[in-house]
Image (tube, rainbow, N blue to C red):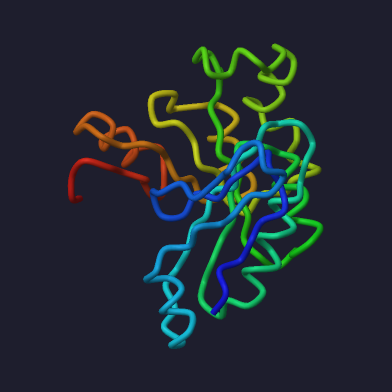
Length: 189
């Protein structure tokens, strides 16, 4: 099976804890699918995939289009998620039956988010994109739980909540109280 190419230089795929991504300056993005996944697809063994779509937050949704095209050939269970509401909205439009989630924080106060205007941080942290994205699940930063918007979405819309990245016993206790599942590293649950 040919390894698929993604047609965007501004984004990347995140599969199962490993980033596959960009040759930046080339105008294309090569998805470097792990050999096990390629072999599994060839031999019809399927694994559940939760794939994070990366973004430059510039409105380019090409990675969402390419990911939905690739997943159309995958018979196993899969879901796409992203911090970028534009990508989640694109997935909703392109593949409405494919589960999609929004990866989020409440405050976006880490310096890595300084490129976003305060109004966008507020909108994202309070799920104001919800009517446009209609996520099937939320993946929220564990250190900011509990979160009123997440609790509301969980109760009112019965959205499952994942939490990331759980690394300590304290994180695990927060996840157990405020989320349905955890994304973890550094220990075996």
